[in-house]
Length: 293
Image (tube, rainbow, N blue to C red; front, side, top):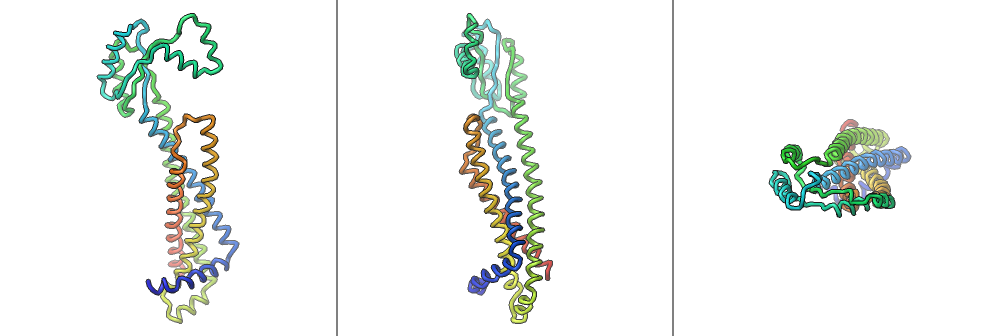
């Protein structure tokens, strides 16, 4: 170990020489690996965003419960007591018809003037209940047993679709990790084998001088790490440029989408991509070195 640290300058110099032997091929490989890792980072970020949105919606899951229109405030309070007694109901509140009217005005925006054609408020009071999404089926069954309940509106379809999207990104991410791993290892191992072949005379000289196999192999390992780590850096830069545009676009017309914090997600993505690139660089280099012996 002491000998390796002492000869660090030599290893760096040899790694530069090996890289320059097939310079343009290595540069193209560097950018190819960068693009491969960039696609992987987009898949991972898509999975992260869809999972975050799904989690936040589940935490804020609520249903609207509509009852008979002729119920007075006393009977509404009694119905609310029945609703609150159901397992899975976290919190319930009455949305008065005036509030329902104001909500619709905000939804309609400029078209809200159509409501002026009604002589009376066309909306009625209803219940808004925050629930445990995992118990939504049993909650539905219990609510239907309450005679005053006429209609239940929830976001099950949205949650089902989001789960499907998150699952698709999860499967796609696993597939891309496998594909990226295999392709990167093949590229790096081929480059290392080619470098060893081009450098065989110098390697034979080092062996005659008594150099260990680890001493000879280290510059090639450094080249492999340079290619994958450099590719990871390129992928991280491209991902930052793309995601910041996506965030700026979505925060304008769609501010209600609960996106994860940009800086936190980028830090996690960079850490994941660079870690994957280092691991793949080591594996690819070791395979290339061992297959050339």
